[in-house]
Length: 87
Image (cartoon, rainbow, N blue to C red; front, side):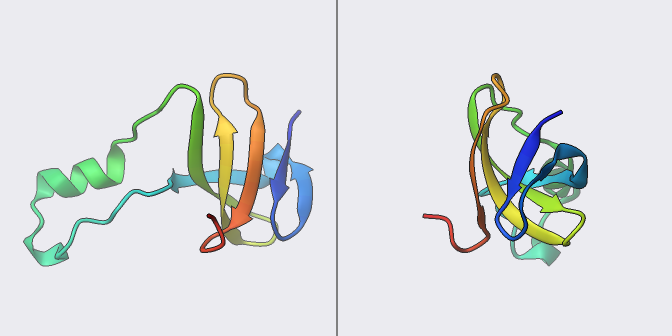
């Protein structure tokens, strides 16, 4: 069992968290002019990087979304921060 650091509640059991999205993924704009293929790519395709990554997660207990930096190979969590507070 792993503990993830919620920037609002502190360390909590991993079962309280859900992956939300890749960090830095940009919504295609203008939405009305974007084709179905580009929408499908934006909504369903993920990079699935090997190693250090930045992701958006949600802590289901407090309902807050935040940025988590972790290594997808070692499962080490480097840190977490509130959205908009990341450097």
